[in-house]
Image 1 (cartoon, rainbow, N blue to C red):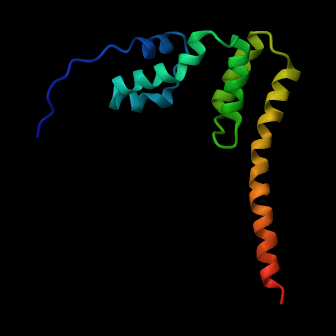
Image 2 (tube, one colour):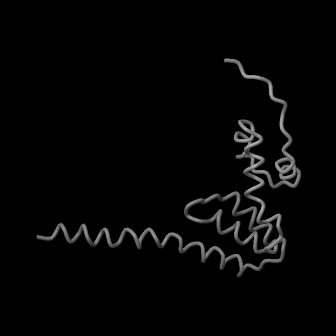
Image 3 (cartoon, rainbow, N blue to C red):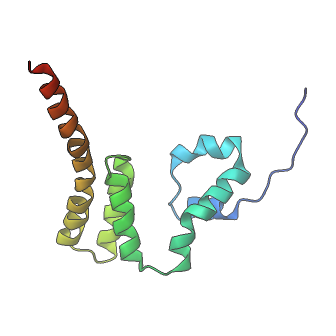
Length: 126
């Protein structure tokens, strides 16, 4: 089976993200495989920011929290969003508070695991 030629689809949002320096090079392989899907994904993922409901500094705080969370741990994003938050007037204390708040996500590991450990230790006892 041969691939049929498809003209490249327009990807204005992806193009704009590149132009603004907001494009993550980790997205390149996904874009190369399916530019239209990537465009739709970026449209969905950036809509809350583009709607302007939240102020830009709050958006950066949320981005820091997502990138610093134990389920994501994306250091380049944390650094980029910290820089943007500082540029928007965020204080050291505000950013520290965001990092402190998101750190409690890890507490669920001990909250889940500790009772299991107690149960297993109880089973070992005669």
